Length: 428
Image 1 (cartoon, rainbow, N blue to C red):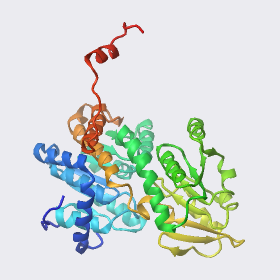
Image 2 (image 1 turned 90 degrees about the vertical axis):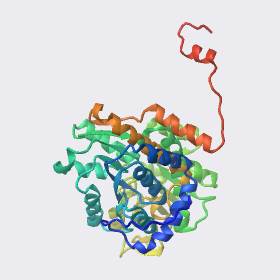
Image 3 (image 1 turned 30 degrees about the horizontal axis):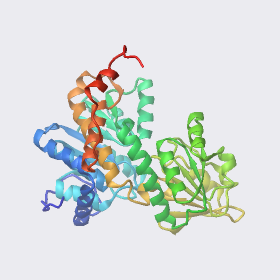
Image 4 (image 1 turned 90 degrees about the horizontal axis):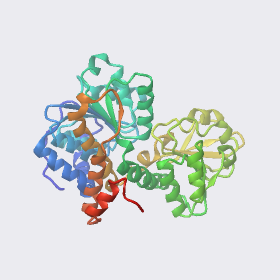
């Protein structure tokens, strides 16, 4: 909703240009219009102040939707310090508005190098947070390397599949020192954020970077989890011939039953016009695949980290240096003259080359995040270190609020139906 700017510039920050705040303010308000669930939560937080006096360190994609999550946490009394979870995903005008209009300590600039990226993570940790809000586990990993800060952390929330995978590995190794809520695992996050959000925004990023015609193209989607399913469905809807690669037999069977061809990457590599990786793993596209790809093949990654496409292996396979032919599109020339086009430096294409998920999708994901953080404040003392599910009532509440905002009504169980479902003696 529109508001009058109150210049409360944070004394501590590292953003590209604070003068961009007005543009960021307008975009944040635009996103807020499509985030009615989070807006209701923000209004409730402003009254109940569940985070009063708490320091929250957040490592998230610094986008307009994230700005509205930060506003909700801040309305609840939190002192938020924010850094970016990807060097190419930061919207500099959004970062400026958070600093200037809301006094948030933001450490994020588009396109920073690796050293600055990790310096920003340390800056977000500051003198020690009580809560961690993470997207990819980088902040959580770093605080575990800081014994001076670790003892003060009550718990955390993790937003993405890759981060949850890393957290479960930490828990198995006995390295995770506090409870973390796997926000990514909720139904409203999996179904909408991963399927519909990643599906639409990945296609958006590819088209902005290339302006190619997808209809009639053969597109290879590596990975058929929730994100891969969404990408494959959106591409098929645009007329692409979608081929899926997988390492999980059940997911490969699901893709087959949905009508997609399933092939090993070695067989898919020579026939693909476009490749999209969404696996959460590394080296999905490697030199042996580059060696057999078509001239003009386009390589895009929509997984969290920039390891799914072996960019170093690609560079070593080519002659000369990569050449930018369009914004977010670099040409790599192979010894035989073929060219492969890498999008967004192999980083997450839907955020680096586009704006990420639509605000209406992130409304639910960040509502889950905000309510999980509120629950964690009260429950952390009774939770063992490890990865914990979001309580079912939170997921149901987010779904209920979203339906209400869309003016969609559903049935209630009758007393007889409730009795039937709770009985083991009722016969057929």
